[in-house]
Image (tube, rainbow, N blue to C red; front, side, top):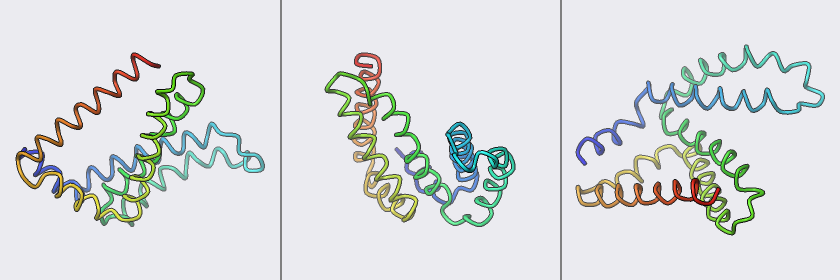
Length: 155
């Protein structure tokens, strides 16, 4: 618990984590746009090869303050796209569990992008004591196991 607590307290100000997450988010976003129909903007598609690296550098330079939680929030907005695509046409009623979780991730991501300081406030509540840290870690492991089971057993 002590190492997790230390890592979570340092994460919001960690520049390397912010750069890595922002790069992943912007490359993923650029890839999605590149492979989407752009209508009248088709002629500008190749500009993405210039704009995405430029956006990564500018984002890392100008959004220096709490970049890691903001980029994590953006990632939490992008991940549900894949989840909802997988669950959309599946017949099982358990697909609704995945859809609800995906929309909760989107809400959490929007909050982190707009108010990244909530990451620290939320983390402090979860890791206040060693016991709380272990209980929330066990809860997260159980939740992850549930979704792994849904992935292999239902989808």
